[in-house]
Amino acid sequence: MKLLFVHVTCCLILMSTMTITAYLTTTTLRRGSAMHHPITTILQHVSSTNCNTDQEIRRRCRCRCHRHRHNDRFVHFSTVSDTPDVQKIDGLSSSDGKESKQSKQQQQKPPSSTSTTTSSSAPPPHPSTFPPSSYTPRPFFHFEILHQSSKSLARVGRIHTPHGIIDTPSYVAVATNGALKGVDFRDADDAGQQLIFCNTYHLLLQPGTDVVEGAGGLHEFVNRRDRPLITDSGGFQVFSLAYGSVHEELSTKGELKRASTKGKYKSTSHSNGAPVRVTEEGVVFRSYRDGSAHLLTPESTVQAQKALGADIIIPLDELPPYHIDPNALEESVERTHRWEARSLVEHLKNVKEQAMYCVIHGGLDRRLRKKSMDYLTSLPFDGYAIGGSLGKNGDELMELLDWMMPLLNENVVADADDNDDGDGSGSVAAVDRRSKPRHLLGIADEPSILGAVKRGIDTMDSCYPTRLSRHGTLLTQKGKIHIKSGRYKSQYGVPIDEECTCSTCQGYDRAYLWHLYKAKEPLFMTLATIHNIHYMNDLMAEQRQLILEDKI
Image (tube, rainbow, N blue to C red):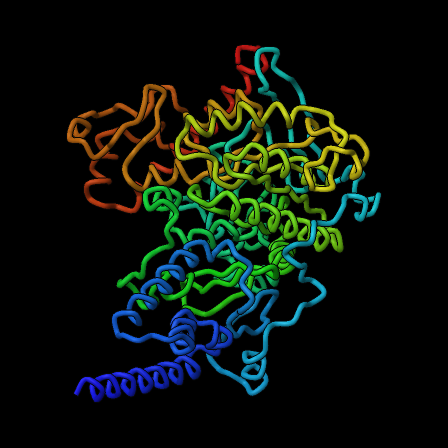
């Protein structure tokens, strides 16, 4: 009887193994060979070893599953060899839901290396590989330092661009889809806004870079012909697909976003495969609009930004989360260096009167930050952006800037061989880091602005004032006003801020704004946003004056 039971158990196990293996083989080819699937690996392991009991089988399966789950946690930061079926469209790749015979054949073969794909172990290109002419000053873009504070690293300057001057230090408003939330660009210009930030990721998906290019570029498309624009690569938005907002990433300690049950297109948890995939070629992600697959590469994002035509563009970089294994962080930094170098090569093929800033990475790891700074500042970029994880709070951000910004205020001879040996084998001509503008990416709340300006930051972007406007928070010299409070419903004739000269404060009082907010009138967002943008630009003008007087 016991022998019969063992025989039946073995047959059931064998049948289950064959069924699951067959299923995986037919359904996971788009991800590569089914033999690399975690469950298939487990079954192979079980079938190839002597498992005398059902308990032993379960134990080994649990061990294998645990190891695969652990390894998948950082899949976003590993070079993945398999990519979904994608079709090249307008400089990026998109899945159209139809599989041709050729694409099916390609799916069953491991992807081959191309001329633009670099081995993950290869160092980034040496500065000497870039043409000498690329290191000469740009006639259409330059940074002029008007005054250096004697009290701090703060400085007053001007960035000259083809579409106008940017007085620094300066706040940069964010127009994600080529539009500020709630206000016309003309209203923002009247409020003193100079540089505006647009997101390539969103504009790629809607309306498409071909549409913008057909209009004559972003300046023509949005009717902002005499003020400068800056676009990013899309890397930050791709990061957000995997880990959510910075707040969500910090609260979940780096876990990938769990599957969402809301919306037509569900986000994918790491148990079903990462929502984004990083390869040496680029990053694969799915559109939040229609679920289509896209491949964003250093070359394609530069091509997209060429079509958009902003004055300042950003190379593709990988944005790792705050919570990350140190080895994975170092791999990410090295990959970012290769991506940014590829982006720069693509940019230099046709500069089109655009400046390109590098993005310095390394998280809070000072060794990696210095490595990134030394390499990227040795290349012919036109400015320096500070990106990556900048800390979990304002104190960590300021601590990082306290250490980092003096290094960007030096003339150095670059040892840019990217191996930290300091032997000078990669040396190029002296680099005057102080002569180029510095941008702090994604950080521009009021306390951070005041701290960053003292440490030598020239420009910083954030949706901070426009987001506050939408939620009924108004900025004043005496602090924030939460207009939904009933205390404001009878404040007739009292503007938001008595010292403010914006059109909202000149024409409307707190009582009327309270009414608009409570009634959910769209006009409230417009009036509140005009005021908050005006406040931010007044704040920056005040900071410039204090620097000129050596008071900060």
